[in-house]
Image (cartoon, rainbow, N blue to C red; front, side, top):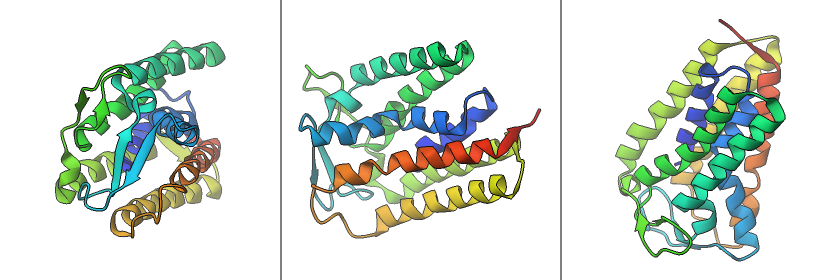
Length: 217
């Protein structure tokens, strides 16, 4: 899942308006932000395998440290705790920690059985929604656009940058999502980690958008 994680980050602004959208995006995508680092240092592995599922050609061979259930549980606690130490906001701490964990839950629904339960376990789980492109769209697009609608209702632009920045972000994410699904697969595994680092640009974009919008009651 890709857009769905962003959708939950957008919707979370309604629950607690103090965290920036950038922070909410960072939490909802945190384990995918870690994954490229683990790929580069060689402790996690992915293979390009067209036809692996209807939605993605990536075969996630080994990623227990970023996407294992126990690991994600630990990451969610650490993220929430770090947020509390920095912001002294318990509600935001619980929210951001839950967003980290929500990534694994959404992946559980969409991935084929490739999500490990723990680094020391060979048990892998996944409900395999990605085997159907139509069912994937029916789940992911409503989450994303529903989250965008909730964020839109919870905030108001302070200037043109707040409006243009938000809508351009939504359009850009949608285009990237469709290109990833309908475009050609990556030529090799090498660039995947480096492409993964571009997620940080989306986090920065979200911080900028939120800075130019204010919350409404």
